Length: 269
Ligand code: ADE
Image 1 (spheres, rainbow, N blue to C red):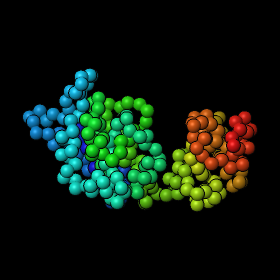
Image 2: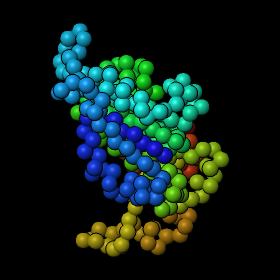
Image 3: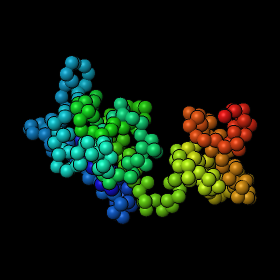
Image 4: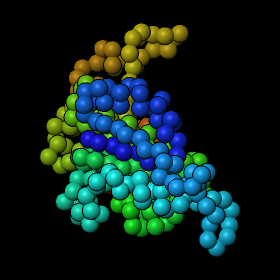
């Protein structure tokens, strides 16, 4: 996969992408990230990338011209082909106004050959970028950052680790929190000792079995396969109920899950 980042802070990406999974995936040739400095596509002495908003109001708005000009030499497929899916490319504007970036979106992006991430800045980006250049607008969460750079790094990390071969144990990326399995995978996943199926992940422990008086749950140390599987499912349900009850309405719960939730006094049909 090729990932292009359009930003006024190209140096920002020196850190986040030079460690861990993105570094490894880059070295393995699974992903190639190119950072484009938006200021190189300006034509004035001050290398101006922003201007005051039409209609008045606070703050500055990123101008459209440098962003459009930056994308021209990238030789992307036409926007029509990208939107129709005939070209496996996506141009993405990162902004708090975007559609929520989820594991599902990360999976969609991981199936593409190329993504272009435009980092918004200041109080906004001229809307013609969203309307005529970008294929989709993504937000990494319901909070406002000063720019899309951190969001772009988040997207690249989440997408890169889904590329085949990027993470040592590929099965583990499929079983993490938020991963919803397609129907054909369900029965296999249900048998697994570590499937989350759209719930938050269950708790993990490693040695020592006792640390400062805090013991690892007995079932993990001495339990059998079935007991461990049941305990993990119960813990995943418990954690989801406590931290993200909204997710419970979206997953398919089996009879065992419903019984567990009933015991926690939350009936689900
Ligand atoms: N830019 C500013 N805030 C953002 C957010 N929450 N997601 C993506 N880009 C952003």
